[in-house]
Image 1 (tube, rainbow, N blue to C red):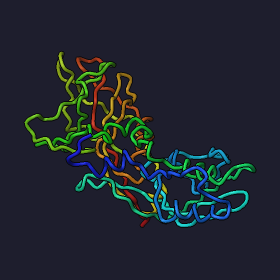
Image 2: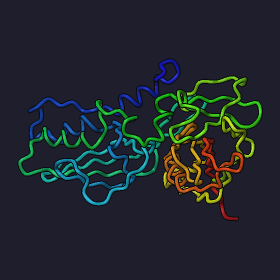
Image 3: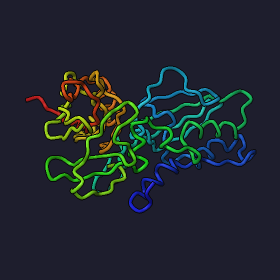
Image 4: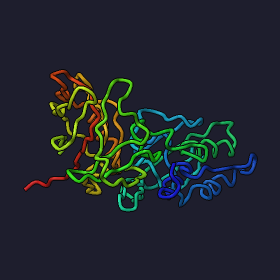
Length: 314
């Protein structure tokens, strides 16, 4: 990962929140709650599993009990504000923190939300206080966890700094993934950026596709026509983003296959607040009239923009 422009992000990815290191036998029964407060209170941690649930219950081994709903890593940071220990369980309460991408600073910025969080962890009958703390810390990411290894595949190019943005003289900026082959194993054809335009490095780079101004080349054999949207089911608006009245546009790179299905999507210009993941879920269901070359369908790589806007009733 580049070290010159994304040191803050590097720290966020490779040292995803602080892991609690406890020496064996360091905690007595009478001081369990105090030790919990010392280790957790007033600190922020990323929840393992990126769950959207406001209330979570774990057994004495740290396994989630009941149905859980995985969400986005951009809405899984929690500020612990209350800690309580009893004979049968410990309880952690706090606020959920969402992260949005600031293109000017080229990094994610945390924002406290009004969404609360309650996590209860059962205590085993023969479980020592040290073991209880080990289980409690295990429900969050720690020093040995790398966020980039835990997020969905479509996040990895941008979080590893492999996306660059090329300003175009004609039309919107072009995004491309460094090191990607012009033609993939499935024959997909990359859309080239205008090479005479200046490239600027980036650590990341209505749900309608505007492909009218994009060049669609098919290598040998001539130019390909642009794929056309047939089904573009709009993404859900996440509760946190809606409550914060978040609006904006994000961009994916994706392959439109010969049969018009969408695959191999990658975030190249994110938004945050969980909206990128909502958009990814929707884009996977989209269908296109495929690109054509000499009358035959061909796979192509294109940029897909997704707009999130809130509309108020008149």
